Image 1 (cartoon, rainbow, N blue to C red):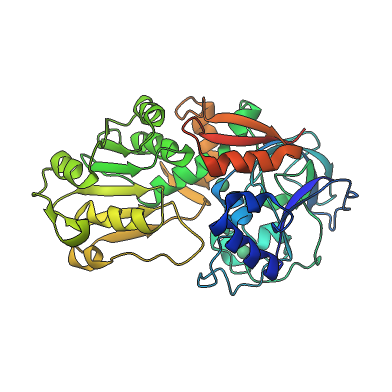
Image 2: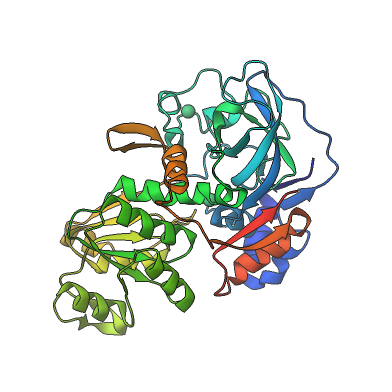
Amino acid sequence: MKVVYFDKDIPRILATKAAAKMAKSLLFTGINPVKYKKNLPNTPLPAQDWVRVRNIACGLCGTDVSFFTATTGTDSALEPIPGTKHTYLGHENVGVVTEIGEEVTEFKLGDRVAIRAYMSGCDTKGLKERCHYCEAGDYNFCLNYGTPSPYGELVTGAGWSDSFIYPARGLARIYDELTDEQAVMLEPSCVSVHSVLCAPPKKSEKILVMGAGSIGLGIVQAIKIVEPDCELYIMERVKSKQDFALRLGADHVLEGDPYAATAKATGGSQVFVGMRGNKYFFGGFDRIYDCIGGDWSNHTAVRLLRARGTLVKIGHHMRAVRFDETPIWWQELKIVGVDAHGMEEWLGRRLYTFDLVQEWIRDGIYSVEGFVTHYFKLDDYKAALKLALENPPDVVKIAIDCQ
Ligand SMILES: [Zn+2]
Ligand SMILES: [Zn+2]
């Protein structure tokens, strides 16, 4: 096996945090807790409900970059949870089932699959007794996040591996109609669709999507699928991504100063400017989907909403952030958090996000055409991370070719 993993080695993590602040080039030295091992023997399946998967390709996600830059804060809710010693990178994958335990009923040899439950839980550890959330398909709320694996510290691999082993229940079958590249975009597309269905747009609303990366571009499409009769603005500094968003259904680009532009777009009051450029106005968007996250975007998003508007938080950091919460209570805002994907209620059906999005891609309702802009070989995973950190304008989705 060839695997890329994060080594939970505290001195290394602290050194990497410091290095990330000093010089990005230091991240690419041996101190980094993200490691690559080649020539590992294949781990035998630990139980009969597991499968082995040969990877075809896997996307690069902000989560992978977070591991590489060791950004998880000692003040975040994630920190006290005992994680495994090694976390295998890559969760936006497509691969082929090459070995199958006797109890597996979901798949057969040769099926294409993707990792569905990636965050530590019942379906990633192969717990026989699942918690009620996982049993209902809401694996993103798993109660066994901190429960040790019954099989100890297995070398499982994940998306950034040439092959990996996984409990069958943590995987989704890829529909025959989808290409491998569409399958690579499935997981991030599920994040976009889940975000919109967590707080669906309403008729005639004025809506802002902050950030037209792969998640924001998916959100633009999902908003227009769920409620075509809304006016959709995109906030994005890269021109080619603005155009991409407009092609996928956004109605306008929010240009210039976001306060003045929002006041104008929504019929708000004049913009008042206080000390040190502190700005506020009355009025604003009915709903904002924030795909950026962090101090600036939290601060800005809550100020661009009308009274009782809704902020949907998709972009996030794995550390505590600081921002002015005044508008939240003053204007009685609603804040909806979003994590990954799970189950959706759609047109009277309850189904996995992974199935709903595959149906939409298959039926031509939702497009991932042109999303993957760069491929790197697994051996060159550091070059992929370097490009992600540089984030030049032409990058939408970077993918690893695992073959
Ligand atoms: Zn992801
Ligand atoms: Zn669970």
